[in-house]
Amino acid sequence: MNSSAFGSRQVNRAIYLDGEGMRLMRPGYFTARVRQFHECERAFCHELLRSTTYRLIIEVGCSCYRLIGVKNDDCDYLGIDINPPRARRLKEDKGAVVRCEANKFFKRRRLVGEIMRRYDGRVLCILPFNFLGTMDHPMEFLTVMCQTPFDLALSLFSTSETATAARLEYYDRCGINVQAVERTDDCVRLDCSNGFQAFAFDPCVLTSRISAFGFRLNEAMYFDICNFLHFSNQRV
Image (cartoon, rainbow, N blue to C red; front, side, top):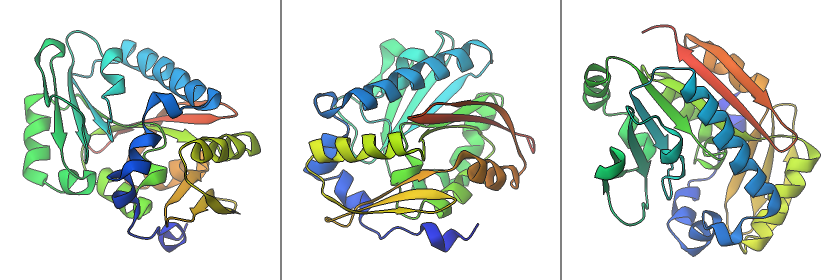
């Protein structure tokens, strides 16, 4: 898989800091299929966290820290977002939110090491709601992620025709005009008039790439609208 094939223009970050990006994460703009995605995501994460002993959950692109409610009482929560809402400290829920670009956060190796030490290595990083598919240069970001010692869970839009139609309906409701849909064996990319690019990745392609960094696929769930993958870092 050639990383350059997935190189989005450096505009997605700016979109998410503007009004269009905020609409993308407001429940009032969610279509029925998007709500279905969120319901499946919560069910997957809830089951995953019931069967594992993670002590910290990191939600990247946390928006309204949607997944804080799925963690166990003994587990801490850290949300990372470039434009987080409201309070940064969530003391009653044993959590915190950091205003930071994801790329910059995971490149802070000393901080990553301190997090691993504090939580005895039992850390799960979640990329929720197709976060990877809306990053600038998603494969470069995935490489940064795979160089950290955290376990990894990904929530992804499916590459099915049903999922593509759902994405088009969702973006239209948010006021984002999709000009072209590009489909390959590896992904489906939406090219928007404002420069925004969004991918849906084939889960087999991602599994192959992530496994090459020493991760093992523990669990996968596949739906017509969305896919979920959970990896453990075997290098730790």
